[in-house]
Length: 287
Ligand code: PXG
Image (cartoon, rainbow, N blue to C red; front, side, top):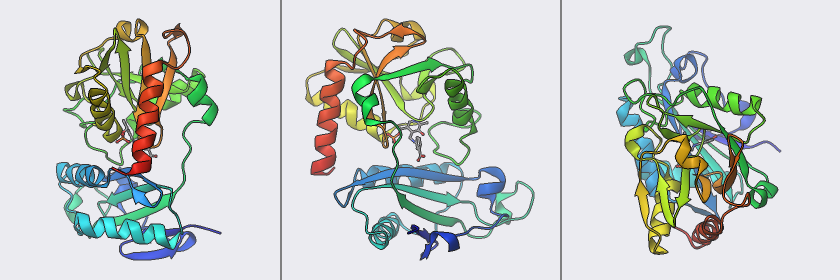
C-alpha cells in the first residue's frame, strides 16, 4: 500500500500527490527542507527542527504561509494517516509555481510537502564495524555563495561530494572548506576525540548546524567530557583517537578509517559507543 502524502493542507495517496513542473523548487532548487524523526509516536527535537526550517526560509526570503504550531500539527496528522509511530519525516517548502526565469516574486504561494516514511542510511552491521570515509575534492559551499547553514533544496554540492566517495568505494565524503579546514560530511556532521577532548568544526568554517551535533555536544558535556569547536585539518583527523558522524537519520555512526588511515584501534571507540547509547536512550525518553 502506498504512502499518504501531505500537500498544502491535503493528505493524498502518493500517486495523487503532485506538484507543478513550473514550481521553482524543481526548476531552480528554490526552497528549503528538513529531515526529522519520530520515535514511539513522539517527534524528536521538534522545536529545534521547526526553528531551523523557518530560519532557512527567512534566509532565502521565503515566507512559510503557516505557523510552526500548524506545521507541527500537520506532521502529526500525516503520521496518523500513515499509522506511523516511528518515522523519518521529510518537510519540503518550495517557492511555488512561477514562470521560467529566476524571479521568485513571480511565484504563487509556497508549496508545503510532508512525507512520512522510513529511512535506513547505514546498515546495523556498519554501526558495529564502523565507517570508512574519504576526503573529496569538492569543497563545501562557501558561506558567501550559499551558506551551508541554510538547509536548501540546492543539495548538488553534497551530491557531488557523495558521488566522489561512492566512486572511491567509501561510506561517506569528508568535505573541506576553501581554506582546507575540515567542514563536515556530505550528509552528517563530524566529531573526533583526541586526548579525551571532543572536537568538532566551528560553525564559522561553513557547515549545517546539525541538531544531532548540538545534542551530542550537550550529552558529552553532561558526561564531563570537554567539548571544543576547533579548526581542524585532515592531519588532525588522521591522528584522532576516535571519530564519528552525527545526523538525524544516522544518529551517531562510528568512523574507523579516513583516507586509508586507521583511526584508533580500527574499531568503534568507547566514548563513541557510549554517546550512541545515551543518544538512543534520549530518543526513547523524548526530547
Ligand atoms: N550536514 C548536512 C549537510 C546535512 O544535510 C546534517 C549535517 C546533520 O544534521 P541533523 O540536523 O540531521 O543532525 C545533515 C542532515 C535527507 C537527508 O534525505 C538529510 C540530511 C542528510 C542526508 C539526507 O533528508 N540532513
